[in-house]
Image (cartoon, rainbow, N blue to C red; front, side):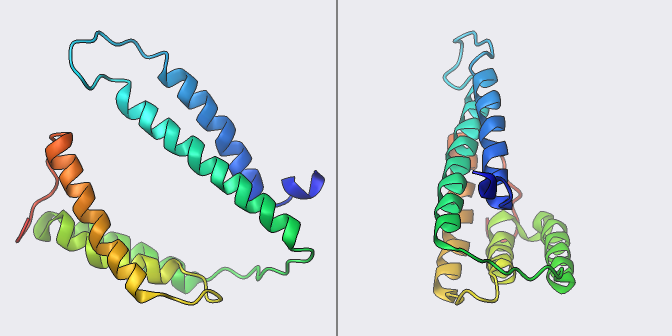
Length: 158
């Protein structure tokens, strides 16, 4: 059991599992008046559920990885080029979103982020990045705009 708590992914999954349980139990304690269909407790319950599910997935996958791997030699050097590239990409994304719009700006941002954050030892599948980069912003835009009635930054086309 000791080896599990030395693994940073397992430890992070365990901590976020506890945080998600605390967050979700408090989300169910939020008072509602039943005046509208979407009350103040809706989004906290959604966030808590997603956090709980993702922390369980992280716990299970890291436990399976620990069982399979007997010795894991990690590269402890920090990749400063990637960190700087991600910071620049986020800065450009935020700067251009007001002028170009959410969808048009999010597509190259997600594609670039996917390429930057994929580790060197994993084969990059550009078609998966492209599909993900197009589908996610379009779905997010329509959910926020039409279902939640929130305005997203609109630009040239959207």
